Image (cartoon, rainbow, N blue to C red; front, top):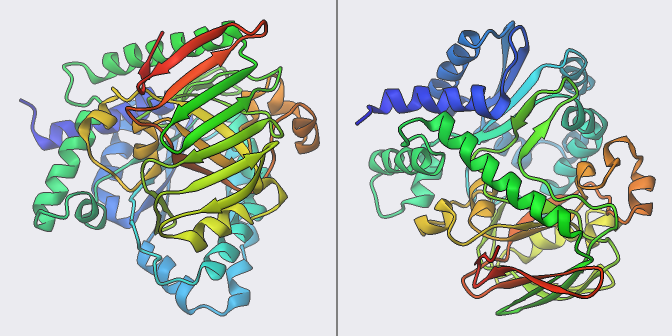
Length: 409
């Protein structure tokens, strides 16, 4: 049995060798919480061992971010320094790999007025939108998470904090396949399986998907040029990488004006530190015409009222209920994990590469192709053991995709 340090080193190698597939001589930029310093050190060592030219660290601290949101003058919340944008632009121009190490802090922002939070979020998104679009299209990037006391206390509230952190690391290692004999080989096998499922969906070129479950009766039309994708992507240099670890999904873009019916969330959504429970939407011709939630309704409102496009959907994703994350039975209060336990949909913008040729399109061209555009992109979970999803082909043939929440093909 491997030690914790050995597993942490393997987790760092998986980030570098599987997630980023870092090229020899490539620069690496890491954005991380100060609480993840020990893991960051392991990642830096793994990066240099893989041949990195240099590694740059962008540290941040959630408590400082909270102080700004609570105490800064309102006009400061929309002030995004030009140097922060230029930093991303420079890294993209250098084709640097980019790694974000999450340190989830559920409910951290529960005392921040939703309007202030929305103002700061929208300003940041608007200022960095172009640079981030180029990052997504041109270079290899990865989102991964590290256990921290605040996150662990939320996931394991029954445990003392130190033991909760230990248990959280244990389950992260399990769900990220670090406990396998050869984690890197296990990841390559898993990604190949997801790719085969996406290829199946693309071969059928479904015109619609039909969702049926408790609180959900939804018909989702798909653009003619839609493409099903997995987290395995290829950057401009031809590097194949995995953008999220863990990942269990196949996803695409819905027709922006072709979604009709009702849908209900099956897991809470933690959105910028606010927990939103039991989301309920009704859509007509793609537009959210009614919405409600048992808690966090103001946060949900701020998402839906971000802009004109945030009243529509930008992503649908299929995840089997027998994924390791679903089988764990744990709620992680973090979208990176919770979305991989369940089918999910996203309010807001479509991902350009889910439309054939989309990475070369303007937002207006994306909309003309049927995909939505917005400053928002917020996933929430709708899967369960009672959800059925059926694909409708061009000629009307029906193909079961998920039955009782599990892959039917």
